[in-house]
Length: 155
Image (cartoon, rainbow, N blue to C red; front, side, top):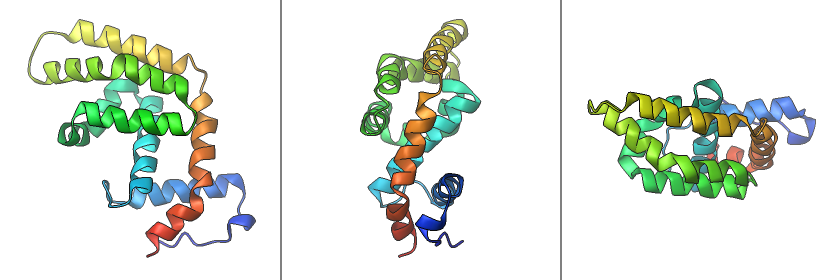
C-alpha cells in the first residue's frame, strides 16, 4: 500500500491514519530502530487502552520473552521519555517487571491470580489516572516522524 501523499495537503487525522497504517503493515521487529520504536509505543498505547497491562503482556508477550523484560522495559521507557510521556515511563518503572513476573508465574500454573489482578488494577489505574495525556503526546511523536516512516517503508 502506498502512503505517499503530500504531507502539507493532509489533515491531522489523515497523517495519524497514514502513520498507523505504516506501523501496522511492518513486520516487527524490523531492521529500522525508528520504526521499531513507533511500533513498540503504538502497541503499548493500543493494548493499555483496550485491555490494560494484562492485554499488553498477552499480545506482546512473545517479543518480551524473546528480548527479556528488562530489555523491553528499557526500550519502552526510553521511547516514552523521548516523547515526553515521563509519567507513563514512571508507571512502567514501578510496575512493569513485577507484573511481567506475576504474568509468567500464572502462565506456569502458580497460584498468584489475586495478587496479579490486584497489581494490574493498580498499574492500570495509574495509567488511566493520567487522563489520556498520552494521546496527544503519541500523536505528536508519531506524526512528527511521518516523513521518516514514509521514506523507510518505500525503499
